Length: 511
Image 1 (cartoon, rainbow, N blue to C red):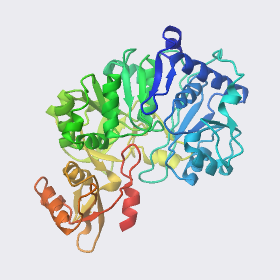
Image 2 (cartoon, rainbow, N blue to C red):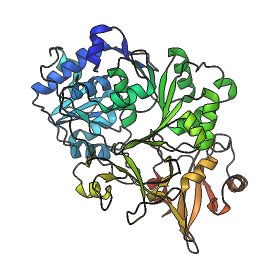
Image 3 (cartoon, rainbow, N blue to C red):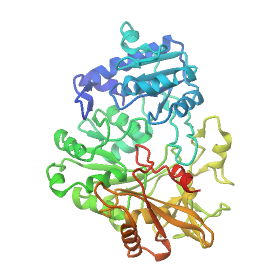
Image 4 (tube, rainbow, N blue to C red):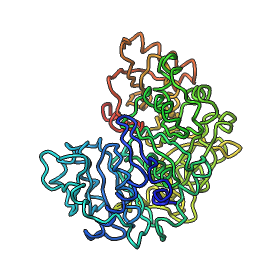
């Protein structure tokens, strides 16, 4: 399926509704706009396999650019607009972009990278880019371009960059599919459409930034299948509930930190909104603390569906609410690929044993752009078609995967492995904790000591008394040796807008 199909049958139906402004983009407008841009790219000399870079806030035009690339055999690289100018320019250069589309909503960043990228085609939408001279006006450039679809519409793909939580972002370049954009074969449509019931009646709430893999891919899948996407300009816990109520949202996707923020709303605020229209609430991107997920199921009912995957698309697991209640803390069983848990030498481990999580596929599914060394490092030492993103976990006796942490974040204290995620989960719903990160810090006697870095809610006094309270709170829930030996308090913890902790930045403060 393809949005153009629905433009012919339901032209006035919204493909996109912006949650804050209420701005809409109909299927007819999405079809005409993406076709114009596809024709424009073709006339500008872009050909199959070339790259379009997109630097934008959450805006309806994101989807025009996305579908223009998808119907032109182009890669689209949506760039995190929260990055610095040097980081953004690096990605635009590294992906080899032949076209750069920017939004006036991120005008400062667009202007700052102008002289540091060599891209022949540059367009800006939504207004002017003050201080920049090389961007052509999107509307003016496309005004006289035909909205008729190109005769040849080879399917493109996204080429997204990892979040860079443990180093420099890496471009993940899949092989382009050998088919037209409106022909069957799209993995997301084939896999997630039937699984989650995406169809023309779907109203999908997307509260996360659209440059991230899951929001971009899932919302595009909903459009391809004829549903409406409600996009939040930025996440706000109460506004999210209000939008579910206002639009009778049927499907949504979240990260665990969003659940925590909604659960911490006062009960009278939560009760103000009707969320009974929700059929499927998908969550991913980071492990969800058991207490948090249980509280969400108690509130919303058994509509939570979790999957574990990565931008690299090395494999995937699935679990619904009923399965999770039988296997609390699990991220599910393999739905794509075969899971292997391996030790540091690459040997398979048995049930309950913690090791590196690998997915076995029939063939290698991706490569890191311009970095064969990183591609090789992600592969199993003996099997090129087994790949890992560095997560640690174990399989239970029924084949359900439980994640423990990322290998790079594991703490070794007195020769014992401690997984920060377990300590963070224990503190997540404490009423005096707004956000928390746990790291290992150097210790002369133990090698490393466990330290919690806590952001307290406004109005809570941070100090020695709260430190003791939090340490005791953890010791009541998990083994004493895992509890923090110290707690520091901060006004801010480095997270990506999709909820992932950037522990590299935090550890750099201490190590």
